[in-house]
Amino acid sequence: MKEANTMLLEFESRSQNESFARTVIAAFAASLDPTIEELADIKTAVSEAVTNCIIHGYADNIGIIAMRCSICGNELTVEIEDKGVGIENVEKAMEPLYTSRPELERSGMGFSFMEAFMDDLEVESEPGRGTLVRMKKRLGKPDPLKEYAKETALKGQ
Amino acid sequence: MQNSKNHGRNNNTAGEEDTVYEISQRCLIIRLGKELDHHNAIGIREKADKYIERYHVMHIIFDFSRAEFMDSAGIGVVLGRYRKVYFIGGRIAVASVGTVIDRVLRLSGLYKIVEKYDSVEIALNKLQKA
Image (cartoon, rainbow over all chains, first blue to last red; front, side):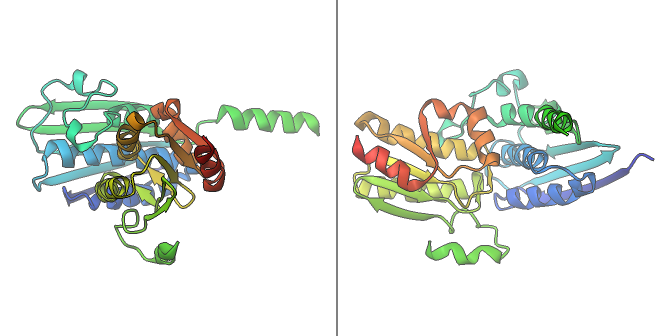
């Protein structure tokens, strides 16, 4: 039987909620029995998306960030949405090392990290309306290194 | 290490106030707390820069032995400090990096400009010999 679950969390765009959002997603994903690496990947991706809402979407004003999560089988979907300024040019924003706010010492790696740590990343944005980031990760994929270790261990027996 | 007792408490500032700064000759050692994200990056950046100016810091060592989480904001902190010291010939080292943090550092390409050592002591040795 496929496991299924959903949840919605809304919180204010305050920077202390970055760690709050990470804690919540970690707890929600726990039923998928993630590895330490998988959990770190998910937390990092969520942290990047939430930070983007705070710094860029609401540009240091306080607004509401919505985090919608769902589990279907071994797949986790996370949507993080703000009703902030939106992104004029999504393609440009997603370029590695691009940042619109270098004065904040932003490394310009937020979207790159989301892409690298999750299996799927979609960004929908409209200037003046807000931004929605949808990320998916399939858990429990065989880790090539661990599989190799298992195989060699079996051969040794 | 005075602050390391606060660990069990569930406070949101687990990164910034937990961070300990030490000066050894012209080396600044930044002993990071549990989490390095945008929220506590702001405080760490400010405090580190005060130390850099006051003590004419040349080299910086980031001690990750207590760190469990870092995102791209942490990369910004390391990169920003690098920019502060590199024109006076300073170097940046990271020490006691666990697997989770190591993945983030590797992915960012930061190892091209930052040296990695097993411990702060080894890093200090290498940096102060030069």
